[in-house]
Image (cartoon, rainbow over all chains, first blue to last red; front, side):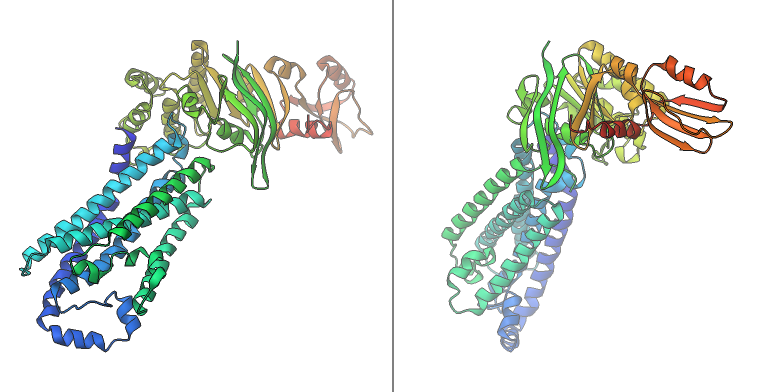
Length: 265
Length: 296
């Protein structure tokens, strides 16, 4: 067994539980979509009575949940958060797990560079993140089919799943950078989780503003807005920004990891 | 013969906290070199710097003439390391961990794993989480030796091993040394270093305070002497005696000198009891401070 396979094996159990959560969220969400659409006018009126900040926090701003696409877009906001948290967990784990488990003296005294080891760990984590997004697509297609949703939404599912993957990759890389930069694993993990929370709060602010402008750049949760994806578009410039940010965070993660002292954290 | 390990003013600070300061070591190829000092003296810091686990603050360190930071990967292919506390992937069986460990080296280690496990009476099919501390240590020994390294670095290796297994372990290390391996043996127990090593460096508060051969250490080593007389002595003095403490009829001191002179002095006293033994490591270090050699 080589390092990459060992990392895949180690990540299997948590992946299974995260996937279970994703499955439950999508199937339960799509089941609810039937009820929402059955009385669409009432739902729209009801939600219209909510304060705007509540609508923004719930990810319902600028969408019409009386149709399946709108409802699915709201559901995807939650899967974006789920993926961001999972990505943070993966990034933090890839950098800090050996130190937390105190197995670093075993692994990092083997004839491999730190960059080699970290690259395999990050690659294994990326595989899980990619499969996670692919399963989002699969579960969405299956749930829609199972529940008899009319119309072909495969393109919509694909756009949302790809966006979800990109958001996950940004948070994954950010968490890896934080974990490599902070002297304690706990502080690294906390920084990653705070980043998810902070950027979600910023996403709410974006939804409250008529023209969020540059604020949008600071929250990956609004790189791929519902209304744009539902309209059949895809913000390629923000996809490129996501890739560029992830690459920059990963370069910094490698840089910091190479220079840090390894020890029990 | 060249140096297996060489450090020149190797220094490591953790922020403002002292790790090691100006450590100069030269371990010859083929020797068993002891590295002794109390807990927190800087033994593990030195070893971790050599292995590239932590980054030096200043100075140089090389193994087989290669720089410990720049040539780390090449160096580690020739090094076997056994840390003081062993932590492995609990859910793995010993054999799986050892195969995983072997996968990092460009050689087939299957036979060697079996041989070492037999010598140490280690059950390879047991899960690591179900093992006692001693058995985990055995797994550590096998993983450190399975690739027949040219340099073996042992950091407090005997903790957790019962006395019988300690003897087996020392025999194993001596066989590795006869095969040609150099050994760096770190410990806070003077007796086990004296048992196996050719030379020893003594480290105290991050600095090397002495470096000598084991023969020299034995010849010049301090003895801990205590005796009880029938009536309290007014005063006791003997050339070579240090840290003399008198408590009623009981006198104790550390002695470094001619053993005949000591026995002659004791013979002239009216003794109830007398004891001459190896001093504790801490007591030896006190001598370094009292003689102002701490910065030597």
